[in-house]
Length: 275
Image 1 (tube, helix red, strand yellow):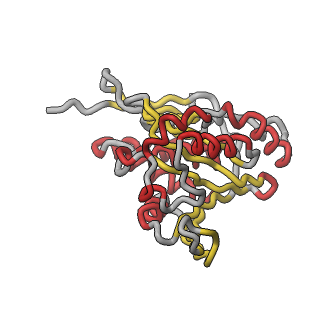
Image 2 (cartoon, one colour):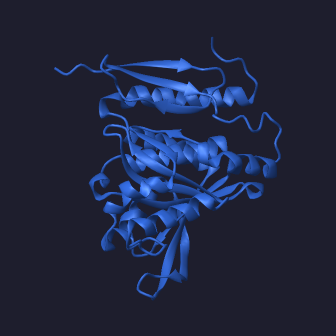
């Protein structure tokens, strides 16, 4: 009979985002509650100052995930990602399909230079290979909103947890570090695969932007608009964590998620944390 990993929990100072790390060779699934990576609110930054701070370090931000690692996007990642691109997989993208590695480098360079974009390459930690890319963009700190998108993965990663793991890392960063109230997600109305993935996050379809942009064939394209709000994030986060957790560990992880949320509430009320 397979050994069922045990779970340990750690509290590291102030409560914050829940991280569930994969079981190691010891058979122990380690769960830790970590403080936010940036203490912007404690620094007393205004929304505008917070935005300027994030933009100043945007290419130095790395985010952990369940089996993935999000690192700052670089032009050099084009060499790994260009072989994934074909007409079918690029059909739902807003930007024109790159037809050469150099064209993809130029696309990445434009994203890196855009101060409203925080662009990442997604690394599969099991193989240490570049699985895809994703971004946060159109960040408006004074309105506490941001958009998530510019995402694609190689076909060999479709149907795996790479996309869900990346979304968990990005949404955690948006809601828990940037303290946004709204994350917007868009997709081509014909892109049913992306639409289904967005709905599984717990996002709400707000409507369709008719004739929103030019398609690659020159025709006008409709875009679906989805959103996830701050008060909806805990349920969305719990759902993502459950999806990324082995089934036999669900009860224990659910209990730890509830503990994490209680610690967060207590911390907001300046209640003493458990020893």
